[in-house]
Amino acid sequence: MIVTYSLNKIFLLLFLLACSDLPAQINLNENKTVKDEALSNFIEGKSAELKGDYTTSIQFYNYALKYDKSPGIYSAISNAYYNLGKYQDALLQINNALILDSNETDYLDQKAKIYFTLNKLDKASEIYEKILDVDSNYIFALFALARIYQELKQPSKAIVIYEKITDKVGFDFEILKRMYDIYYNFKDYDNCIKVLEYALQLDPYNTLYLEQLAALYAKQNRNEDAKKIFEKLYAVNPGNKNIQTELAKIYFKNNEAKKGFEEFEKISGKGNLSYEDKLQIGELYFALISQDNSATAIAKNIFIYLNNLYPEKWQPYMYLGQLDLNNKDNAAAEINFNKAREFADTTIEAYVQIGLSYFSLGKNDVAKSIFEKGLEKYNDDFRLFYFYGITLQRAGSEDKSIEFFEKALKLSPNDISVLSTLAMAYHSQHKYRESDETYEKALMIDPNNILILNNYAYDLSVRDEDLKKAKKMSEITVEKEPMNPSYLDTYGWIFYMLGNYDSAKVYIEKAVSINGSSAVLLEHLGDVYFALKDDLNAKKYWMKSLELNPNNDTIKEKLRKIE
Image (tube, rainbow, N blue to C red; front, top):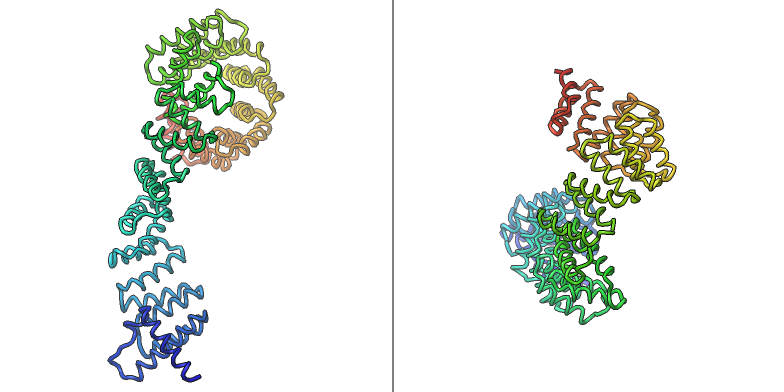
């Protein structure tokens, strides 16, 4: 038993020395008794630690400290406290170690680990930076620092560290994934492509990486590179509709519309696509332009192809005209729109769509003339009356617009858009009874329509009428869309009219925080502050409102009152 015990101690000592726990812990110049006592207690502490008995290990380490104040013993105590979850004690002990040896990377690493556990990431990052100043090849510190920078939402710093890691140890999938995510969030698609190309060197048949790479090639207009990958993927998996769709997009972008439609024929399983089918595909991409600018080239190539294939059809001319307007080529748009009207001589849709195209681009006079021409031919479609009324409204002829809204309503008595617009027009002309009746009719058709509820509530509030009813309607809109600044403003304004200025301030301030460029919201907030006898803030927000709407004489009068 005695022999076995001694051998175990010798083995443990050799193990500890090999692990570099004691190279500078014991002062060999002191007498044998002091050295043996320190070493003996340290070994007993390490033995207890290896068994998971950290409390006992700390006792023995503290005995060892009585004979030798070595940084390694302080570090061992710190580690034991860390394992017990006593992080402040652990921090105190590792600081003692660092006082004696400030550049020992193991001690610095221990301190960084404690800070990381305490979620003091800024302090942890500072220590890992110091470790790397001491030893730039300390790979673990590089990994830890990169992760911390990501946690701290400092991706630009993280990517620099990841690049250093790849320079030193090459690439692995985990590093590549993290680098890709950072580059992608920065919209640095060129570097995203490089990362995926490296990843494919490690795993050349990974279909997910291939799809991502092809999509990035397409985003960067490297259409031939994208096409090669998608064609390769399609050959392996011809039933994958996502790949077929992406391949079709590439064909359309490359002005290979015939091939693009052939892919859609395979996707749909319908065989030969009709003109209407092909038109719908073009309309689909046209609708995507507002979300994805790359859809512009796709839509344009499709409509040019359809225009050449079906020159007597009016819709391709119309869509090409709209694309011309988007591109600010008014002359080309006029030619295409005239062609559209020529081939759609008996089709009311051309007048509706072309008029709306001009209207949406702010060309109100042109839109008005298109709707007028449509009304000369057709007087049984409510849309022409409605949209013509809208152009009059935009031109400042609210009173004249009512006539056309009323005609539209006779043709389509349940159309919510017509009812809503007519109700607001009546209100602006002080025809309050007609306005309220129109709102009520709309709510009978759609009682939960939050646009109607908001507009009706607001109109009642500015008239200081039936505020309880207005508040009840407005509550519904704020519950359904709590971040809509218009609905918040209406709700706040009702509180203002009720004399509850504190609540008014809460909701209108929130509205302004979401949309600080609305002259109306800013004026309302100024009004609330004035009611709260805060002239300084009232003036501040009235001035901001006046900057956005310099012709507002009402605000000028309000400002004169507090000057």
